[in-house]
Length: 348
Image 1 (tube, one colour):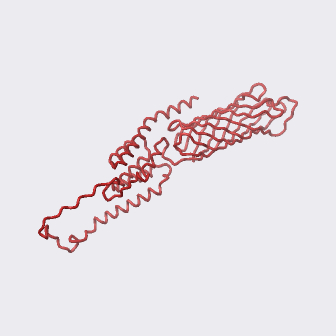
Image 2: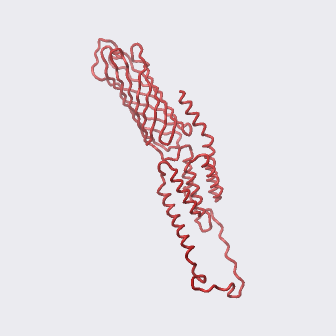
Image 3: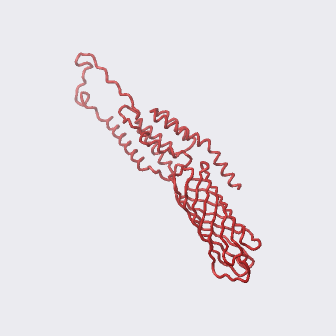
């Protein structure tokens, strides 16, 4: 229980900065939609200082691209790819934009080196200031910039097509990594015997291995996980040791409580295998009955776990649970165990 309190407190300490970052992200989107790209960039830069989320870098690059500042757009696109662990989900799209911008810069450099055609071209005389003797004509007025930036730019901005807004989900609390749906976990702890044993029994070592696949967006408040569980513990008796091995299907509901804190509620259903029972076992109703071989019982296990995300791929958790099996013939009573486990989860 002490570990749970510490984990929740750590997650709350970052809540203010994360909320300010999300507010600045929203402000930047608003400025972008209004064509105020400098203000949008300023808001996103301030947000990135609070939360180093690559989504800010992507949006800054988008704004510079619309402003036709190819050099800065390329710089921020590259910083976005470099800071997106482990690989940006839209890497191909961003690399194509970088390539197009680099070609644009090359064309601009070439245009500067080639003299313009017409009277100022090579070998042509420089015309007089007013060859016709008439008043010089005024240059045509510059076209007003549209919502896409400069007057020649298309009126549809990346925001209208969802390019900027697409990264807003990255600031809802998750790190910028793509969703890791497969998980592998290992935990150790102890079991205590609530029923099923004649007399009393000491707590026993417990080991659990688990794996699963999670459905739903990483930013969702509630997600569903379908997993499997292998559990081991034992009952130490005077002359023998009864081994308990569980094989369960373990569906789970995941509740997102804070940026890095999650509550898991699982219901495991499967088989409990008990081996090593002899005639004097505390599990049996009386010593006159002989039970041979491994005994199989149904098992239902209810658990509630608190999980804290250390990185995008690694979490720690505590996991109390109750496991129950119905009374089997010749056994003393239904078997009920209370487990308390702690361990690590890896999302490759």
